[in-house]
Length: 206
Image (tube, rainbow, N blue to C red; front, top):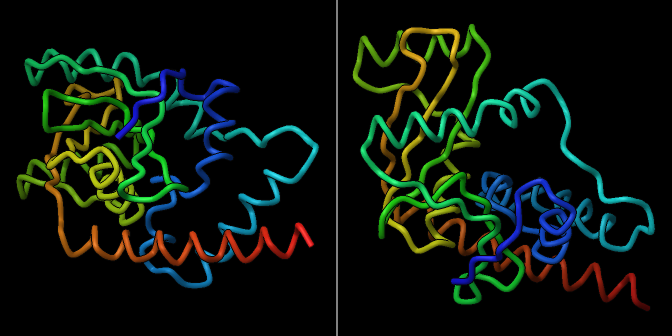
């Protein structure tokens, strides 16, 4: 495992995402290893071979997350009595030479934290579900994202922390553990992705 000392959302970080195109944020497409993975590989290679600027993330959800994540991380540290170490970009040659992950933080020797700053309606729904059942439903794409983060960082659990400062219950945390079956699907999907990237690059370089 290698931790690249870059700031997330910086030019250097975006460049690493081109160099290691199969990232944990696309874990669901990687795990299913179907049309979505092929589309992802095409998209990533188009960014690599284009002379234009690397596309940056945008949108209300992204902007809200960028603004609130530092506050959420601090509150999580206090609530859980832990120290979070930020990790810019993580790769692991033992998993895949073309994969990477950007966890929101590394916790202790064995954990991660992933922070999601939902809008009011979604946060309210998740908190109500948590109060009723002791857990909240994690969107499938985020579940796969965390499983791939754990695979690459070689860690055994990841706390999903949902945060919205507009509520009394501003931060709610649920721990997710490594799932061997899901991680095997990710590993196999990464091998498929490696081959797809190789074939498409060979075609482009003819």
